[in-house]
Amino acid sequence: PGLDPGQNRHCYLWRTSVNQNICFIGAGNMATSLIGGLIANQHDAAAITACDIDDAQLDHLKRNFDIHVTGFRHQCLGR
Image 1 (tube, rainbow, N blue to C red):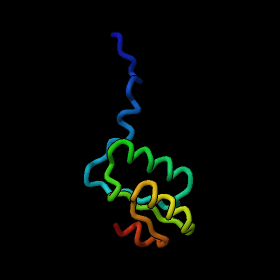
Image 2: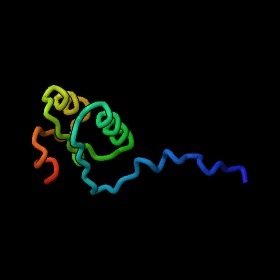
Image 3: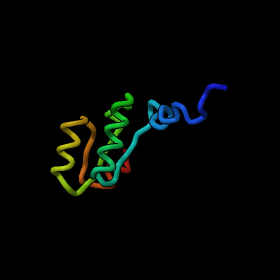
Image 4: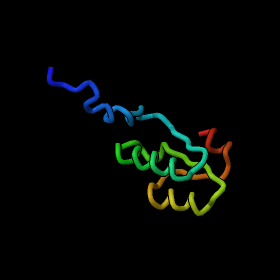
């Protein structure tokens, strides 16, 4: 009683294992938003990689979040 079953459900959305690597294939707006949320919730930036053909977008992510970036999909998947 008194607790909303949906209360604080957003708190569990970003919980990830400390050793979990995450790779984004495509580094557009959606990936940028998700990466920002992960970083804001203390996910290790060193465990995040983004892959894209747009070097400018990869530079933007590297500058703002200090994550790994690559233009080669196989490097992203091999991490």
